[in-house]
Length: 181
Image (cartoon, one colour):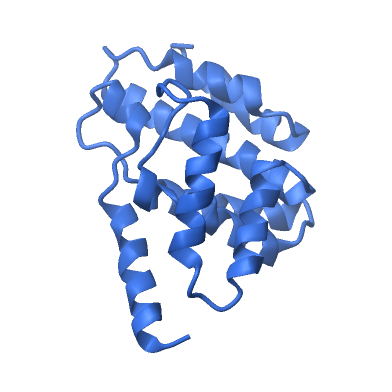
């Protein structure tokens, strides 16, 4: 790999700072978080919870940093978008392949993304739970800032997808601490 390829990749990754999360835009949240902001808190949560649960932390952190990378090209597609889950995964697959094709270990990075999408390891399952918990935390923060907005679907989504007992405990604690669910 040459320096030009590395710098191109690093510039591309920086684009995640400008991509606003679609779900918040759909609810007219003012100045919503970017994909990069979501990814950062998700990675920090993965570090702490992965350590606590004694999982492969390096694998989990790599997976957390990769899981939304394709959004640089395809944007943040939500379940409410007008494409099927299969179409979304195919678009993400192609976008990620193109984005990382010149990186050393591109195959390894791509396999981690596939593992996450297929929920094929304890790390992948934990990361999906963390991704939803992070979304819930952001929903709570926005709900507190904008009490007139109806963000219930984010609470319901998190409640549906969070399955790991330790993460469910956190979810239940969040639910018990707020009065608008």
